[in-house]
Image 1 (cartoon, rainbow, N blue to C red):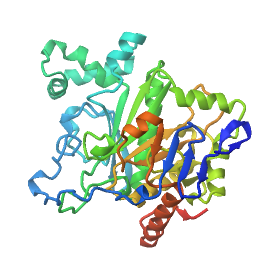
Image 2: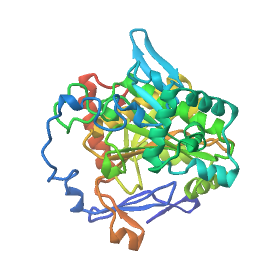
Image 3: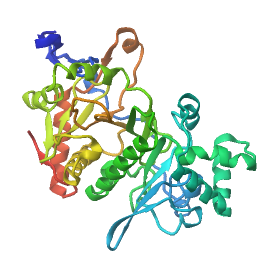
Amino acid sequence: MSALPGSVPEPLTRLPDGTVKQVNPFTGTQVWTVPGRAHRPLLPTDAPPPRPLRPEDDGRYCAFCERRYLETPPERERVVRGPDGWRRLEALPAGRVFDTVADFRLIPNLFEIVSYDYWRANHGYRLDEAARERLATYLRSTRGRDHLLAVLRARFDVVRTEDVPRLAARFFAGCHDVVVARRHFVDGASGDDEKASSGTLTPEEHEQYVAMTVRALVGLYETNPHARMVAVFQNWLRPAGASFDHLHKQLVAVDEYGKDLVTQLARLATEPDLYERWGPEYAAAQGLVIARNEHAVATAGVGHRYPAAMVWSTAPGRPWELSPSALRGFSDLLHAVHAATGPEVPTNEEWHYQPPGVSPDAPLRAVVKWRVSTLAGFEGGTGIFLNTIDPWTMQARLADRLAELSAEGVLGDVRLGG
């Protein structure tokens, strides 16, 4: 591969036989797209036929559904849409969770990746005064105590009543949250193949989904002074790592930055234009821009283990520092990428941004990866990943589908092309 100034490998090289070699300009990941393998089916061809939905199961398909609210830990917040618009309800008691149907809920994860016990044992982390009061208030209610006991027993199997206050602390000061959307299937669905994904939300719903995620992000930083960064991600469908095929995002606080971010922060010291140069600018030069608006740009990703699209905020600042219009612009393009992908494709959505206390500036960007291949021995033995869709093909597929969706009027502020 040829090299660019500063010993940065050329991100994209097309060989005479048609092989496309990629190097991620931020992580160094090596990816090849090999002729012939690119024609493999995107989705399995042996999927079972859809099954009809039963009316009696409506609202009960999984623990995230609206008739099973008490199977998840106490809510931090919910957003409800009414005749006068959207409204937020915070810290509902157990006796009121069924008073409204939440369009989006913010709840603690019952099975944490980085647990409350981790933070308590390793950093001396404890409930703050507001969390202690909320826990005490919840325990004063019979329905609240019963809810906590039931959820704890689902988590730990055997729980003594006297242990509930101590064990339930994780639900009021935990550092792994989940943002859950209302629908399991699209409204009016008749079969179990009609799942409600990010792309089936309206642009206005997706804006609320993103805004709640940003509020949750801020909340984790504010309550845990030991969190160096909070990972934000979405696993859609089981092949992408989802426990439930019910739309949700996750936020996990961690006490270190991770190798990729540390490497990029070091490069930013001497390459302050790192992200712009190798992100939107490089994508435009290579014909990889999918769509844009005033506040963001969507591009095909380069050097990812799976076919990927990226949404870049063009407004400076961390997610919580963006104006409502800038966050809406980012949301509209992220929603459009999911809509063009379709609900049948397993995906991971990853957010990257500048954590608190870190400089220089880095833009908010999201990567949407199509989990349509399985890593195997070749990748493990070589460190080279085989990606069946090259960035130009990815750009063309998404742009063509976005043109159709734009004509249908189901997108937000999305301007096609570069």
